Length: 345
Image (cartoon, rainbow, N blue to C red; front, top):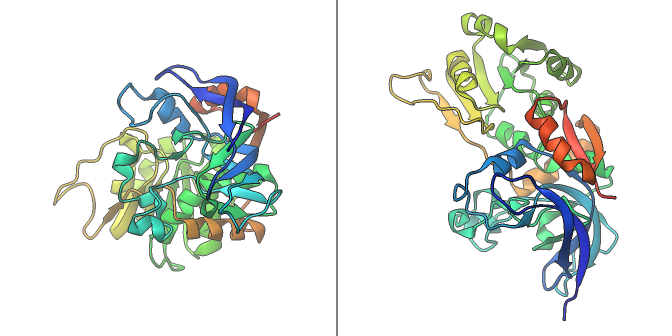
């Protein structure tokens, strides 16, 4: 018989309402499940999209605990678990799928064939996540061991994983290639580092904030351009790829206008923008438009390995879990540089 334990948790109970730090119950693991004691959890723009969702817009059932970028220690394991040990430090792969379709069996849970009918997108997105003292993970396959500090490790599970997955899909980028990173936030500043670590291409960062461009340069960007001066990009540089971490009408139009023939526009931001596709239309000949969602389990192993090798460093703003609501407000208002990481007391 499994028992339960009480934990502090940041939970959403009303659509378009503020989440609350409250007491919640987490049951002990059974079967393939693993209970992780949370040491750090990242705050993401995806959390804001959940908080802003109208009733019925998402298939999630309330209430649930927020938080999908999770690092911690294994606290307890189910009877079938043999590949992790109690006390082991891990990060949690967040986009839990059905676990049975061809893609999930291949480690591609982010593109689960049954996603539309699941009622969740993963940890903290319809299922109880990591803004809590403990989180129950449905299978040990979603855990990646790491010796990294938890505040560095947690953001890798989305802020690192998502741009890695997008970059892996771009194909060969040579020394004569140029890539634009639009939006230098939690994901964007890691995208710059990943591009420098994985490709020889020229990296140009675009943002509305000068301090974000300073961060991009510190991360290895060859050039930083204020969004208000982006007209110069339309008149000059043509990019082999544009990684749009904003996704508004303005940034999508900029990406389409600056893309090289045969290039790739990867839209990772969910800013509500629209781009009307036609032939002829806003995209150049041979262009590809991709909508990457998170990444695969093998991708996460690769991202953790890069960080452990010193190729990735997350700029963090570490706060207590009790500061979650303020963190959401700061993120919404553009007052966050890098990634806010919450630490349970």
